[in-house]
Length: 437
Ligand code: HAX
Image (cartoon, rainbow, N blue to C red; front, side, top):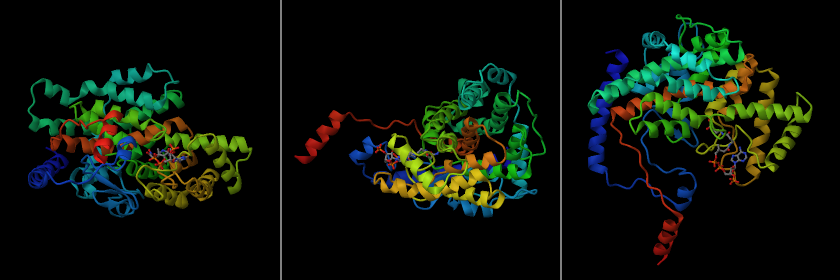
């Protein structure tokens, strides 16, 4: 058993004992009450699931195992010339609650490289898809096509006992994480680079190799990928992609089926597709205004026009956050260090100065501040990565880390089939009537 798996087993065995005792002693205590507007309002804020790897505070932003993004950038191993920590370290932290050593991070890079063989039929599946199919759809289909490799499925059909679910889910998750960058880079090179495929470089870490396979070999871009793949990985369990993976996984669908389902949720414009929408919106603005250098007052007018058409301003707002997203700030800091004079970066910063006041003045937007998707496209464009419809795939590669780490925890803790109660409006009306009697 490898060190990560062994440590994970030690941690979840202790956690499972603790949870069992906690539920036995406190199981009937009420943690929250649910309001009718929450039932109709997309279940906002209802505390109804367990997610161990990260937690989102509306004012502080995301904390991974208790650590904020600035703390992670300080504490996670940043090795072998990298100026940003490697997401390998964050995966280790999410799995075990412990920071890995430099050597453990190096081991994980090598381990993912070792497992990263993609079956020929998956490549043939991607080849068979027309370039008009959105890269996120191709990505999701490619993940599904790998499902025949699931150890969970194989062992389940052989009568595996519950106590082994975690083991095969760990193996499936490690295999999948190692393969998603290969598949994503293949889709990219096929769609945008005349199918001029670049083979993996076995000496590189997970992010640097992903950048390299897509055709971006600069030191700075590799660091951008390390940052990008770290900060997009997990955002507690209630967001649509994480929750989808958790829900689908709760039926004992394997890691492949669960991750693919989560990617379909990420592909929606109110979620991960917003990174594509942001750049498309900025390009529409530049075209409509007839200038590459719009002033703040021109941007403000364009924002008002967007709103008057009943369209949301992409990259702004959040279902939980009530401040500028720390993931936006981390990218802004990267841009200040590496490309402060870039014209697109300047537009993004000017949009940031203009939009919150306008959204705030509407009186209905709960969070007028930028989210993670407001900045990522400008950074990618700075390095010549201009294919906006691929941006959500990058998000998906990163998100695989958090949701699969948690799928391992789901199976290790034997979390049950998810099955909340729904209500009809008739039942709600009856409840209102009875409670006012
Ligand atoms: N532009 C215009 N209107 C907005 C808005 C925005 N950026 N954000 C919220 N609103 C509107 C809502 O559409 C809603 O209007 P109605 O009452 O007329 O329906 C009202 O303000 C209240 O919404 P809210 O409670 O503040 O926000 P929600 O929790 O309902 O929605 C969203 C959160 C992220 C979906 C929303 O802010 C939005 O649509 N933002 C733009 C799309 C976007 O950037 N999505 C990415 C979010 C982060 C993420 O998941 N990344 O992957």
